[in-house]
Image (cartoon, rainbow, N blue to C red; front, side, top):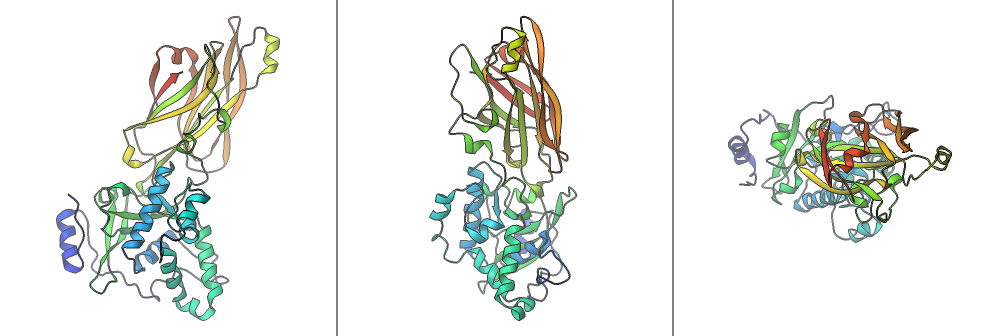
Length: 403
């Protein structure tokens, strides 16, 4: 049963009954402008205007109304529908209120008149009232906004699909270092129409039972997830392909199951890169024909939300086209994206000519800090043994099919 929070002592008592593991702070958060300055005005001693903690504190001090909660929910719902995490980037918040990651120009244009007083307006007002900015004028307000928009920060709302449409969120931030808990700011409507703010401890169990906004850094907006490709068959190098005529077939990834989360819950979903190296349409009859073929690498990202842990998520993604019996082994790599310098895995795909095996050398890229979920060669016979085959690769389970 969902419960709405009440203000004042009633809110604290409701939280004690509903969430006994939460520890309320002794003193509520102060939201005076002097206490909640976000950093320094451009040109002063620090080149960084914002930290995750600064932005979380600012957000907790904004006089948000129900319409602002709706705006954030609209945005994270749009991002989720586009195949990304439940996220609302600060860049979109400032430039296209209500827009989700992956929304195109038409979707953003449709939102222009939807929010009469978006969160952006509250942030502008808040920054304008800061003492340092008041002295220096509108130019510094814009400088703060530009810095925030370019920061890569966002509002991450885990389990947003369970929101009751009314309850105000807890606002926290990613403390880093793989931490699983942090303090956050509890928002609830006050009698004067403003917000009552208390400081509480928050972990993922809490986020499953009531709305929590996490200020963190965006890690996936530059990727195009598989969901945005679902109108076309997704083939090597990201190009739509037509189904091959019989008897040749395409190799499909039919479903994907994540068996563990790879990052702290503050960081959000897991982004898996699936990379398959093969030789499409191979039909050489003599060794000299090898020069006519080059290997290709299918490279796609699959975003798995934390709520989908252990759930089979269906897909229809092509890993290799024009699959023939001459294709003997494929190179297969799965990583969970964590950034860092680009590096490569030097490997090969193997084909057969007159019972002799020949390797096509290739380098499959990934990044230095990525978790390598699984890498190795997959035999073509593995895929032909059944109409659909399912295997475990590290901590993910994948179903394949030749169709």
